[in-house]
Image (tube, rainbow over all chains, first blue to last red; front, side):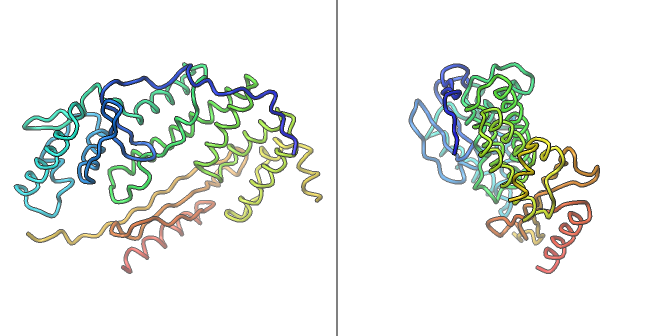
Length: 255
Length: 66
């Protein structure tokens, strides 16, 4: 397999990174974690769900609303008590995460949230406000992927999923146009992992391999896409994908 | 206090259209759970409006039968 590495350059890890937040950071991508002064903070599951819910609201959450959301099966007084107890557990373990008063709860404004950083970067990418010199793996994570029981995550997860796909496509294209094959490949592979049936992701990878002079890998990618489409959707690749591989596809078809 | 006795389920349809495919040939990945008490999700894919609608109807049938 031909793999020209000479045109690859390492990722610029120190160029543009998500903003650093001193103090408290909240991780919602891939897994839930609260970090305070660089130390992870253990929270009970009910507290994790409450923190994630509040963090995703972008506005103060009324205490009655939160209590009703999480303790639906008990009376209002008991739900309010459970909320009070959960908030107390959070506040005793980590200061500076939530602002709590008698009426509402919200995330303290200086808490760094990885989801919000990634969203901002994605919007900047789509608005052409970056030079692409950041670690593309910032877009690799899904929003709390193991949390199946919470309906309120679903729409946020899907919204972010669409946003990062568009950002990955744009970033891949930007790197490819600039001849940064390694970075384009990484962005393209992450986009493909988000949805393996999207022809546009396969097409981008084929173009990257061809730009790198790697016809074997381009053909392998085309063949992988063709098989996936045939097995799962029962369709042939679109003309656009066939055009991307060009004459090489005819060679492959004759095999 | 009586617990709510309603049932709920989730079906997520991620649909996209590939440039170069017929205008109304939408492709979709359907992620579903038969009810929200069930952990885990089933995934399937569909092509075209008829297949997608059929998948939604199947999911509704499953929901009603439970």
